[in-house]
Image (cartoon, rainbow, N blue to C red; front, top):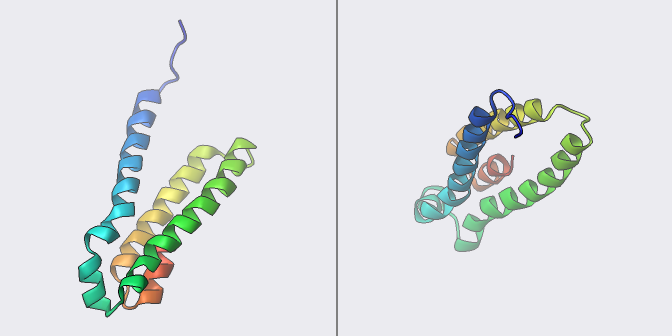
Length: 109
């Protein structure tokens, strides 16, 4: 029988919670689409740009950071911690966006 590494359950629960927040974050813009359109005076097409930007950047960063941690160029725990921190800051900044391009920028970070 293999022994688990110390802290493996905590790591699993933490990553599960972060993944849940990630999925909630992806869909929150769709849930408040009408409010965004009214608040920032956006068209239907413009209101889709922040989500599109987020998905494109997410795809590219997933490949890049996957390579970085697989090759062990950086410690994966530090990469995840910095990533979650930057994601949190960008999410808060997106809530303060005053126009479409700020919203696209912050949702894409």
